[in-house]
Length: 403
Image (spheres, rainbow, N blue to C red):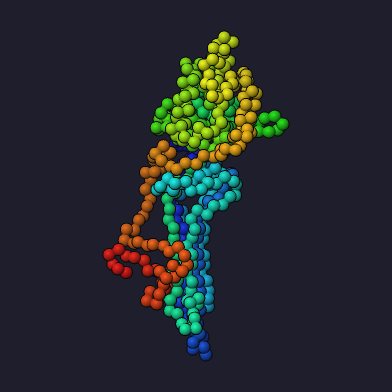
């Protein structure tokens, strides 16, 4: 997949901007010997924002931009001048992108609409200038607040194609042929295994100018949930599908066993996939005569609706569309969530991406962030540790120094 432009998994490092320090400036003017404090507030740090873009279809650009940092807010100035806010960094991603914490694997958020914006990391709040701390008993405060520090996080972006029906089957089961025959999609078709190397989408026309979206993924083999073949890399795309269409060719030696293997691999990858609606299609049925067809019907699984189809002759395609449309719009399917979220673990990681190291940790610095403004003021400013308009340091804890 190194030479492919379709990138659906990438790990990046994001950092929001830190807030600017407040100023402890005093007003100085001719004939005004005691002008009083007039230090302004610091500007906020820039945010890290995700934005959905329907014109994007891959995460390729982020593979070459692994570090995304927002700028810091500027310090406050004299005459109650507020510092300039840091510039936000907007990450445009395809619709259907899911975000995970790279360290813990925890699910964070997803982008499902064009133009949708999600504030991934919030910029640090700017510190208040000394003008805010002047009181009747303390008219010349010599302290101001520092800005809040930046937030740094390693994240994993995972793209899942948005489709109503997901095709599941072994290599050479006829999935790409079916997609090309009932939609305008043009996936690669050949007579060797693993012809499909990346997912593809097709819009299937239905009655009364209606339509639904079908997603094709590379073939699954036994052991795909443990990393064999290409199935593990792309199984994430069918997690968004409302209906799973299992395709098994008519020349299979044991259709029921093949269906059980496919079901097992999906269960091992994500057990919640078992809650989705399922349809079984016996492809390449043009090779069967009436006697063989009746014999195969007795061997089909009992817990899933089945249909015999042939993408070459068109046999059973109308019946298949009707069956898929009923499943997509069934009350049970609409009531259940069609988007399955799970945390990242060894089954869902991409090894070459996770081995990419970009952390720059400072072991000598340790900082605990207060939660409220009152705690912030109490922790980070006092007269002995005053912050002026040129000094944006805060009273962090240096290990072993006591400072």
